[in-house]
Length: 61
Image 1 (tube, helix red, strand yellow):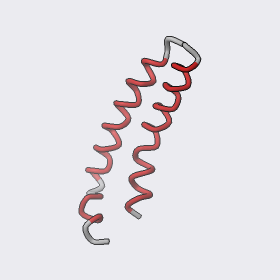
Image 2 (cartoon, rainbow, N blue to C red):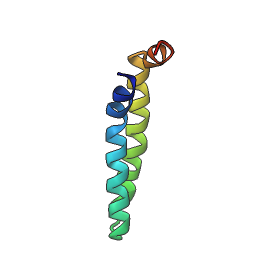
Image 3 (cartoon, rainbow, N blue to C red):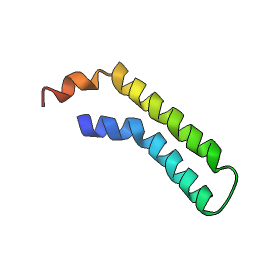
């Protein structure tokens, strides 16, 4: 349960990082926006995991 929650919470960040890498590879200027979005989504994923108290479940497994 805990690994699936972590993956679901961080999936938008991983997707945005992949898009940024693809745009940087194609030498497009928009990659910086996706990199910034990836960082914001990463923090939002951590906040979501904190709101779900996932850290308490991890010790019980």
